[in-house]
Amino acid sequence: MTDTGTPTDTAALDAARDRIRSAHLKPAGERPASTARGLHHTALVSSDVERTVRFYQDVLGFPLTELIENRDYPGSSHFFFDIGNGNLLAFFDFPGLDVGPYAEVLGGLHHMAISVEPQRWDELVARLTEAGVEHEVHSGVSVYFRDPDGARIELIADPLGEMYGQHVL
Image (cartoon, rainbow, N blue to C red; front, side, top):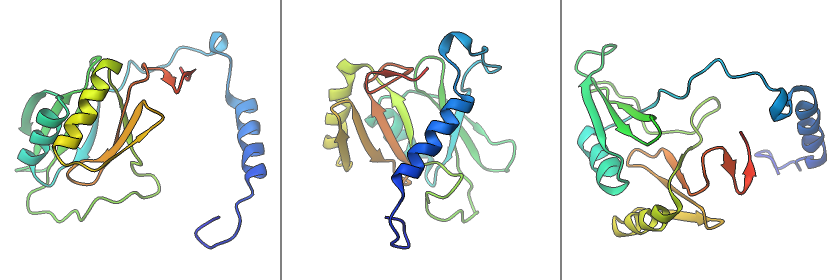
């Protein structure tokens, strides 16, 4: 069902995915190399720098690597967490600017999935529980929760480039 209450034509959606896949998805051996080196950082907005640091570093175990002034907004902080494999999760705060509450909107962030070692996954789920963070476990390898500002985060025990046992890279 759609938001308007009309039924969703799943057969048409499946056909559209098949058409797009057929037109654009090349077999792994035929794909050109990406022009990118990787994700330098993803930047989210923080309403409270110290609360964000305590959550990401102390609860999730992502070390804070730097805290500097944001060059684009005087007085704003730009800070970074190590999420492994040379990747960073960054945040900005905007003191004095009312950015409003987090919202999932078209073109916005739905969720961010961060790969963790399977042997650490259970420990991280337990840390979320101990910290009183509401979370939902799916398929025994994914846990979804919201950070202190409402951004949806997934910790997934699947290796990078895999999704529920299927290679996606």
